[in-house]
Image (tube, rainbow, N blue to C red; front, side, top):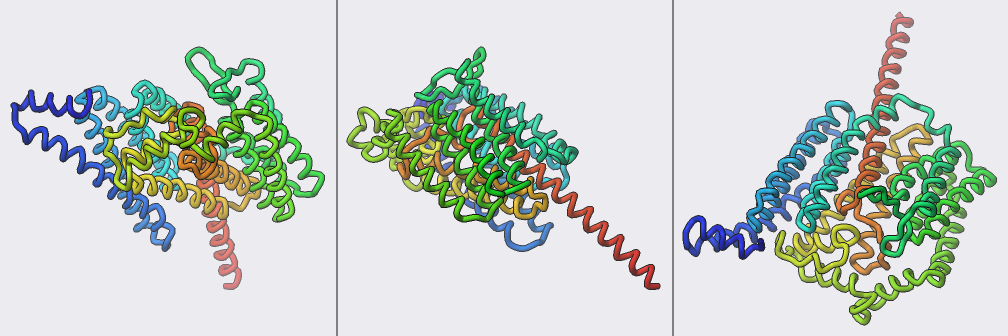
Length: 475
């Protein structure tokens, strides 16, 4: 049932009164402005917490962010319900609300030192994803909720593992071998979807090994480079990293290959502080991009769509053109949730969900979404800078680069800033493999943050004890 049908049904229930239909339209139209204002306040708080060291004030900000998230979630659900009068929406809302509250409370209860900003942003992005995926495809929403609930429950134990086991940096070569084998598995039992043979389908479940390997990949690079950045060791790591990338290229998963490559360069540069490595890597990557363009027809198609989507709107440029139409139609304030036509964009719930968000919730909301993603990256880097163990520092940085570069590729592709690479928007887009790997990424960062806080507390306690002993000796 569409908006007009829902309005007519309300009029039929409450009587043939014109103001019922008018009230329905006003409520649906007004909601988008309230959502934008609330999300703008949330986004402002994402950056205001970096100023000052008042813990009590920051805790108030975090609580306010939670209230804003729940309010936006409620308003979005109310609008979707008014537009359809489908009670299933209310049931799904209650299930989502229970999940968000459980994760919010459980993580803070289990890990007192957890970063509330990282947790809040993870839940906010998940909530936005639930709303938009539910708007586009109800079946996909249910699957997304199941995947998110399962991995959030498992994720409770990830910080505990990081805290209890201090020797993750001993298995660099093991991580590399496991990653290569998992990526190569698609050549044996893989399936080609959207031109890339990077999927494994088991029953009704499809997964992308590259989404899970990218976590192991960072562990492998960080483990080896944290021990040595001598030329021979850098070459060894580069060769192993290159094997990962080449497998992805062979699978035609060039978006993932690019993420892996940039992540390796970032970790290498920070570990070695050698700008020559960075320059050589960027030159090699540029040359590889040119070669890929000439080797793969689907790369040529995406470049053609990027250069002239309007001239090829009936062919290669259709997806990008529809994306730009949607963003332009939405304007600054959007058409309103449920009022646009995002289903005209191919795979709108996955690669092009940012376009659907821009169309219905507007450019202001979309800009705030980008800023929230950036605040996640800043928080990840901030955590990396505070960590004293070299391996964990490089791992945090690598995960941060993977995250932010994936965001850049997704948003850049749908806005025609760069050619589309076919990657998802972390936590927001539909995709079991994507949401699982991203939540694991957030939990690993959270675990490193908790571990570092405990180590700092232990150090402070030790220093106070030593100072006390020195004072006693002086007496």
